[in-house]
Structure formats: C-alpha cells, structure tokens
Amino acid sequence: MTLLLARRFLGLLATLLAASAIVFVVMEVLPGDPAAVMLGVGAGEENLGALRRELGLDRPPVERYLLWLAALARGDLGLSHTYRVPVLDLVSERIAVTFPLALIAMALTVAIAVPAGVLAASARNRAGDIAISAVAQIGIAIPNFWFAMLLIIVFAVVLPWLPAGGFPGWDAGLRPALAALVLPAVALALPQAAILTRVTRSSMLDTIGEDYVRTARAKGLTRRAALWRHALANALIPVVTIMGLQFSFLISGTIIIENVFHLPGLGRLLFQAIAQRDLIVVREIVLLLAVAVVAVNFLVDLAYLVLDPRLRRGSHGLS
Image 1: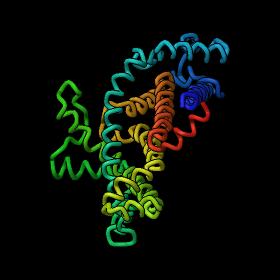
Image 2: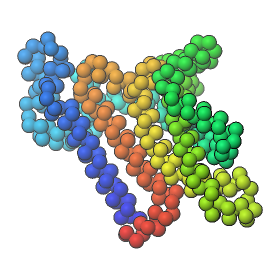
Image 3: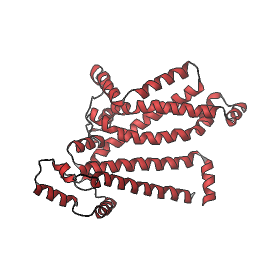
Image 4: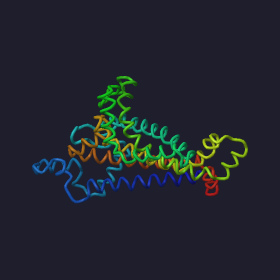
C-alpha cells in the first residue's frame, strides 16, 4: 500500500514537472519575442530591452526555467506586467470565486447524474430510461455558454429571482454570494450531468446482471436496496474516473462562464490577461490549471483504493 502510494506520488511530481516544462517552452522559448508581444509592435527598443531584462530574457532558457521553478517553490509567481502587483495576490483573490463555483457545479452534477443514471438503468428500455436518455442527449448537445444565456433570460430577466451577473464578494454575506453563483453553477453542471448520467447508466447495466446482485436479491433484499447498496458501489469506479475529468473541465470551463456572468474569477482573469498580453499572468494561470488537473487525477487514483478492495490487497504484495 505504501509503495503504491509512493509510486503514485512520484508520478504526480513527474507529471507536474513535465507540465511546467511544456508551459515554459510554449510561453518563452518558441520563436517570437515575449517582450514584443507584451509591449506591442510600436514599442521602442529601449522599452523592449528594459522588459527583456526584467523578464530575464537575456539569460539562457535553461537558467530561466530553473530560476522559475525555484521561484515557484518559494510561492513566488512573479509580478503582473499589467497590474504591477504579485500574480499570487491576483490568483488568490480570483480563485476564491472559481473554486467554490467549480465545487458547487460538481455537487450539482453528481446530485443529478447518479440518481438519474441509476433510475435509467433500473428501467432499461422502458419509458423512464428513454426519457432520461433523451434529456441527457439534449444536455450533451447544448453548449454551456448558450445555456448560460438562456438561464439569464429566464431566471434573471423574465423571472427576476437571481442576479444576472457580477459577484458581491464573500464579505457581503453567504446568501448573496451563493445566489450570484447559482446560475453559473447550473450552466456548468447540467451539460456535465448529462454526460455523467450516461456513464452511470452504462456502468450500472454492467453490474446489475452480476451474480452478487442476484444473490442479494435471493437473500431477500428489495430491488431498490440491491441497486443502491450493491450494484452502485461496484459501478462507481468508471463514474469516479469521469467525475475527476469533469472537475478539471469545470475549472477550465469557468473561462467562458465567468465572462458570460461577469464573475471576477480565475477564468475571467485569464481572459483579461490574454487580451492585455500579460504573458506572466497567462503562464502562471495555465500552469495552475495544469496542476489542478494533475492533482484531481491523483485524488481519483486514491479514490480507487477506497472503492476497490482488490487494489488494496494487490498493493500489499507490492510493498
């Protein structure tokens, strides 16, 4: 068990190192002058030279990369060229919106998809299954930004129940802050819930016919208890895999949704940094998103050990 966890952790570190190298190469080493991109074509040579020295572009790429890694290890994400404040301060302020939004969207996704998938599998080829599958197919086909605008029209304009955009801040109170995140979370969650519903249904259909489910029914368990206590527990591994991927998609999907709802989150900051050609902020946010994806996948691997005792038994032999 310990050896398996150590291998997973070393794989995590190796993946993070590879991701940082890719981000660095794309942002700073590929053909082109980052200083000219940031200042524009009309910048004078004196200003370009000053910015190149500030960015360390007068040093070899390997040295710049190692210095960047050392700064990241200290928690130093550099200084924003546009705002002239530490990037860490910008990210810390914006992630307080993006991360709760992604968590709420993920909770809604699971709350909708898992029961719907189980119900569809239990009513296979009947009216309930057909209806749930049809709605899920529509949800997959609808772009989340279009669905977001539809939600604004219905629930903020026609029925003024929720704010159409903006974020009052957590200091304004939990209720107004959560109210501002409801529509964005729903816009993010429903398309992902449609995908997870289909995955849950498929995984449940694979387990419903297993011998242990029939044995549970033969021992007197109701069909509902056999489904939820036995079949679902063994169908969760592929579901958890998709959930891990979806959480990563939700974090990156906030780039569009936060701009639709004018939320001051990480996605909107990235969009603004691209528009303002602030490559330092873009680089750090892209790396942060990559770290989030890798970390979520690592947590999914740990969830496998909890859900499947066979993996834990197999890992003892390795250690």
